[in-house]
Amino acid sequence: MLYTVRVRGIYATALSLLLHKKGFLLSDVSKVLLNRLPIIPSQKTPEVTVKSLEKKLDYLLVIGYPWDAGESVFNTLIEELPYVIARRGSLGLYTVFDGVSMGDCIVKGPNGVEALLDSGECPSKGARVRVTVVRESLEKARKIIVKDILKVVGQHVIITRPGTGVTFSEHIRNDEVKSTLLSLLQGIIDLSNNHVHFRSGAKLAQPTQIENEVKSLLEELEKLESTPISSEERIVRRGEFIGILGLPSPTKEYLDEIRRTVTPTIDKHHSLKSFGDESSMLVDCAETQISIGGDIKGYGIEYYFAKRDLGRFIILEHHKPDGEVITLGRYHVETVRLEEEQVVLEISKKMKSRGVLDGLGVEKRPGDMVKTKVRTGEWYIIHEYYTPSGSLLGVYANVNTPVEIGPSKIKYFDLYIDVVKKPGKEPEIIDAEELEKALELGLVSSSLYKQAIETAQYLKRKLSSTYP
Image 1 (cartoon, rainbow, N blue to C red):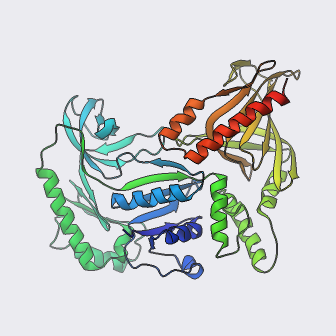
Image 2: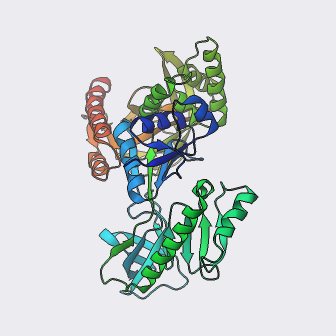
Image 3: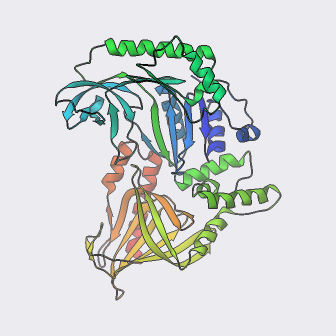
């Protein structure tokens, strides 16, 4: 089946080309893409939206209704994008399900999934409930949130009961369009007991499509209200598919190659764009220069940022496949150099507190020093730990996707497995079981898993030969 997709954000050109090639229809296409891409857009309402997250530009959000549409696009992107990191919602946004209260406002749903009930009063333990998912969990630290209301989603509207009034997507700004949409509800729905939210796709729909969908969703609400709550945990009505894809630097390089087929694109285009306004502006300037016959390299921009921070402080942004992001720093930039198109940095940080060095099991004290070696293109970062007198405490080699360098920041995706070495002892691979679990959960692909294992084995040999 051909599903219709809307693509937005900094990866839009490359992703639109990729999805079009895989047979998906592109709809609600921006003017920039219409001028750039050799496609004829569909006039249908988009069933799936793919967009970069506004404040987390290393990630793509895929959201779609019906469920099969979103899942199809999500799986296609996983298959086509090398080394991509994937997290998907277990139940789906606006999914209605029957569950059982576990007490303390916790509801157990299908497949043992637990959700937090956002309700004025928690049901007693063992009570059967019918709830709607209002927030999915796509990160380790976030819980699924449900409400004891009924919310049914369609292509153009979402109806909530009980509820009142009408709201519009932020993307529907035209007052005339809003007035037309409101008029379609007259005589069809009681807004004193139902809340109607017009989705962004409503502005593209024909009046009969809106009217028919509202009537259909009202029939489904009546059915949901009249159907007894099941004695088993089960999905009663499937809502929207929702998933997030993390894009490490090799994935972005692949998207660079696709984008380059239709418009001037420097190497590191998407990597640099993902750092925000300043680096994005430099990319635009560089590609303008290319379009008139210049030759500017993306790694030169990375080198510029690294050199600018020489003698200053930077942070390491440590992204985990499960969604956790850890900020490590502040590291002092000691040296910066360029070696065969790779940027090499040596950075350091003094320890301020007592504790134990993770993985090494060695005590750390205030004044101890960590010296870190970073090189673009490598699948690891090496941390060396020293006493104030210069004695080596141990070495920790972190396995991760190749680093990206931007303004006062180095970022990468951690791959769980690491290698440690204490003085006088052989190197040891640690946390391999966490990588195995990530593979089982579908967070990392088989290719990313294989790369991480091979890197750890390489590091074991390297640390053995490099350090006493």
